[in-house]
Image (cartoon, rainbow, N blue to C red; front, side, top):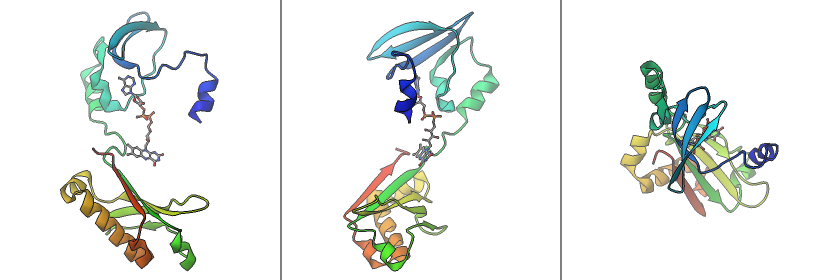
Length: 174
Ligand SMILES: Cc1cc2nc3c(=O)[nH]c(=O)nc-3n(C[C@H](O)[C@H](O)[C@H](O)COP(=O)(O)OP(=O)(O)OC[C@H]3O[C@@H](n4cnc5c(N)ncnc54)[C@H](O)[C@@H]3O)c2cc1C
C-alpha cells in the first residue's frame, strides 16, 4: 500500500533515512536534517510532523514549543511500545482437525490474545500477544516465557501444541 501511494508522488519527494534534528518556523519552515553523518538544511512552506509524540523532545524547536505542549507530547505513550509477539510454528494447523479455530482470549495465561496465523497452505502457526508486562517478561527471561507460551497452547489446543518446529519471539519493549 505504501509503495502504491509513493508512486503517485513526484520523484524525490520521499527522502528516507533523513533524521530531522531541528524545526525553525519563520515565514517559512526550515528543517535541519542529518543523513549518513552529514547535516544540511532545507526550507519548506509547510511541515506536518507525524513522529511518535514522545520523540518530539529530540527535536530542537525554534521558537520553543509551549511548556504544556512539550509536556503533553513527552508523556504520551507510544501505542504498543511495551508489547511482545510470539509465533509458534507447526507442521500443520492440527487444531483445525478437531474443529478448533485457533483463536483464544485469556485473562490467566501468559498470552492474552491468540490467533490462527497459518498461511493458506502448508505449515500451521499460532500467533499471540502477551498479557505479561514488559517487566514481567524481562524478569522471567526468554526461555521461561517461551516455555509458558507452549504450556498455555497445550492447555488450549491439546498435546500436539507441545511440538512446534519453531517458536519465534520478538520483544518490542527491548
Ligand atoms: C510492537 C508493536 C506492534 C504493533 N502491532 C500492530 C498490529 O498488529 N496492528 C496494527 O494495526 N498496529 C500495530 N502496531 C501499531 C502501529 O505500528 C502504529 O500505530 C503505527 O505504526 C503508527 O504509525 P505512525 O506513522 O503514527 O508512526 P510510526 O510508524 O512510528 O512512524 C513514525 C516515523 O517517524 C520516523 N522518525 C522518528 N524520528 C524521526 C526524526 N527525527 N526525523 C525523521 N523521521 C523520524 C520513524 O523512523 C518512523 O518511520 C504495533 C506497534 C508496535 C510498537
